[in-house]
Image 1 (tube, rainbow, N blue to C red):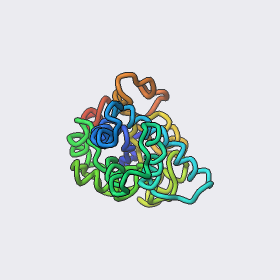
Image 2: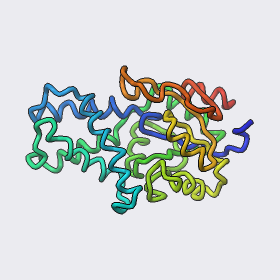
Image 3: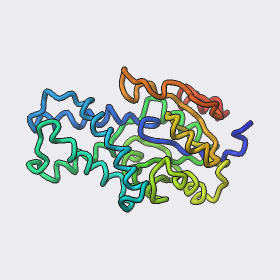
Image 4: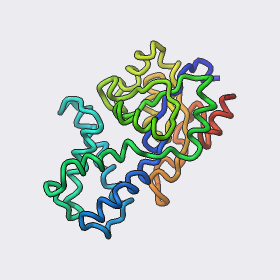
Amino acid sequence: MALETVRALVFDVFGTVVDWRGGVAREAAPFLERHGAANTDPLSFADAWRRHYAPAMEEVRSGRRPFVRLDVLHRENLVAILPEYGIDPARVPSSELDTLNLAWHRLDPWPDVIAGLQRLKPRFILAPLSNGNIILMLDMAKRAGLPWDAILGAEIVQTYKPAPRAYLGTAEVLAMRPDELCLVAAHNSDLAAARSCGLRTIFVPRLQEHGPAQTIDLRAEQDWDLLAEDFVDLATKLGA
């Protein structure tokens, strides 16, 4: 079996482990109301904020700017989108922008996540392999009870997925061969990048990540090493 060599399961987080869209919308709603944008759909606001995510990271991956943690990029992106909703960021207290930016630290896991991770933990090393920075991942884990063994990802290796260094550097930190790591993700592109670096791959679909009109990542687009319906199903299939 392709997964026989696996010692560590590393997880994409935004979308795979946690519901970023619902969590950001929940915290954006009162902010929008306070600042005269009560008619704005908070879910659409969350989508708009997220659309700046990949382009901001590409500025770092391309070398056009030095590495900065995701919290910095998220805050810059927040300031960038506020005028679209009639909000002048210069008129919003900096502390209030900081608080809303921390919405990304307070995201809820999907309902199957905690039970699945708890079953997997005795058998595998568990860690996020996320573009989120360390304190973001720690805050999220403490709040939600995510039983990670380590916090890994972009800030450790100083680059963002899907750069090869994000995957290979994580293997180096764990003193493991790439094939001893398995990425669990709901995104085919993330899995493809990990596979190209020698990692094993597990696809877990999250059909509501982008809401009911989601059109991407509805199914596996390659023959990944394993497919699971959710984290509980994953634990069962891995014999945990």
